[in-house]
Length: 189
Image 1 (cartoon, rainbow, N blue to C red):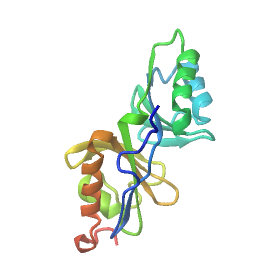
Image 2: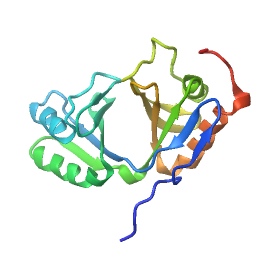
Image 3: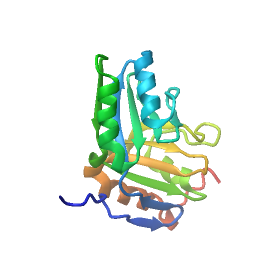
Image 4: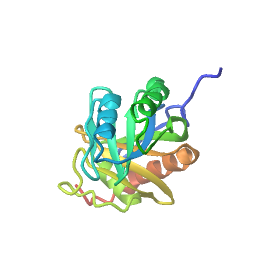
């Protein structure tokens, strides 16, 4: 069997902010009834985290849980464990209306960090990123110019981005262009 590789093999760019493809990440799309005790318990077992509030991400000791829609979550787990976690969810939710799909190999992950990271993201995503409007733990599904993606901000002021693997090169080039040293706007500085 061949070894899994990330979309861009760890590509990075340093400018107004550092843009980096972060490699393989375990991701599971989970749909179901958030009010169900069995659903909540399955999420807790899978990640160690609780269901997040709307447009938020919650962290547990085995992963994270991101709100995608009123009936959809994105579970972030170790890449090597994603298949086993998906199988465990299927067992834990047997008899419950749900869908659990390992989408790890269909996604690419990036980080954007540095003093101008908010500006870089704001140039390409229609989200209010002003401090106080978008804080650590906030999560959004949105567009990055021409492609769909999702992102969140962690406690260290690092933005994490997830997109389809098929548009990884586009996303990297888009973020790198927005982070070019001569592209400073200064809206958040």
